[in-house]
Length: 408
Image (cartoon, rainbow, N blue to C red):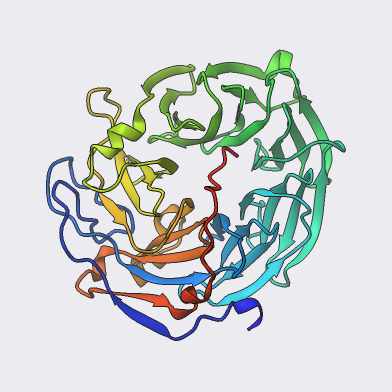
């Protein structure tokens, strides 16, 4: 297979089996343990397999998958999308065409599970057919615009929103017609746009200016009549996400690694953790938590986890409670031994409607600045105290480089 994509014969590496005092043990679910908060021993999650996506100085930005998790899509710093088998890591193909950094990818095109979309600094939102890896459409903003984020939604499900340089753009996906340009609500790059899962007409945008805006996208969209509320995180926003039984809550991670929790319906801030890294560091006995990768919400358990990482590549799942006195709890799952640098993306098997994690013992996948794509087994097969790492990993030349962990 070309470009070093083939996985060589696996080496067996003994996984760490020693418990960590004060940490939870992940249960048989493909989410971390739903047990009540307390102090019990835990085991680190084992590495199922790991592959090298490139042999150069490139790294992984984001992992995405379709509903049934039949393939993993990986965006790389080479401005390409590559596809792998979620179970074996086998290379399946790639999509090329972007001429700038890819900021977001998603299998979210209405009624088209085989289509993946991507947005880039080249000013485009592109759609690709993953059956033949060909581009099928491209939406463009103005000549100087970058596209940092996108989301599908609207009452009819046919709107595509994208965040650009201080603008939120909306298109009708069916005919590629731009229906709105919201340019008065933000003063800096829009890093996130998301339609609310249970109120598809509501759109939230967040930006480097620290603001998160709520829009109603029904009817003829304009800022004078459709801007419902504004929340101020007071610093540059990196990621936001919905959670709660009716998705009425919004978590917000910033570029200076703070975490806040909001009720986006009324715009009230319920929790503000400016020292989130220190709080997380105190909840395990490993290295200092240097950054946060993402948050993960489990609807069946109604639980939110903050995913923190170290510069050496270890990850921890820290439960979050809406209680300032004990907002971040002891790490329930630890992913260690797969990465050697900053982890950029975590894709949990529980984050989809598929049951691959339950049936195959897979907890999820991670990718990072070391160019590795790692698959982690769940604790339901914890009696198998082995990990497998492709021998192709040792082929990559190790270079001393400055950290590439950038704001966006």
